[in-house]
Image (cartoon, rainbow, N blue to C red):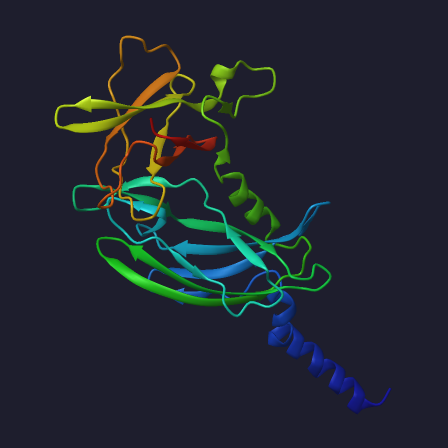
Length: 297
């Protein structure tokens, strides 16, 4: 082999390691896009194949500076939920965003908001038009980053999905494990095999109560004694601004392993009625998160 050819091979190898290989690396994660107090990127995981549908796994990773926060799909008393626009994606039939269990934090104005701190991954499930071909995902992300003040942020991210496990697989799997499990009213989740149902978490009942001039909703949550629990509620559409549930005092018929939460029926859109409305309740513990849809009596 002549010296010129050797030099060309060496140059090609250097270019690959220093940047020419970024396209292949980008199939597992896109480059970080930095904002003030935050950075975002796309990550990819292994695809899932079944007899019914094939879908690809990916996620939006948001890294926040210490002391800064961003919001859940329902932000609570104040805040702005993230917006996701997947226009411009190729070989993408649909994208479903999943929301890991959030936390409650003070909004600095006397209320509470719902969202995330530290590093969070929003898992995505992508159904391709043609499962035999790779999908190229593009997302325009709008979100707010909040410390003492809130800063609007945007990112435009792109990633060609490899359809196989890569370096970000464990990060994506951990985020998927924190997505609340959908269960029925009265059921429980999280109890170890062979353990009694009282070891799990569930929503036992939801009902309205009259309290003077205003109605409130009382939710009974089942959970092991001593297990920290938080509860969030969403209305049937995003324009419902229901208050965050708060722990309520015990009733005469309370039994061990049951907690009462309540919230006023406030924040309904004009012309809407609470009776018959479909509510989504999300109960979160350090180990388990559940989601229950129920129609209000």
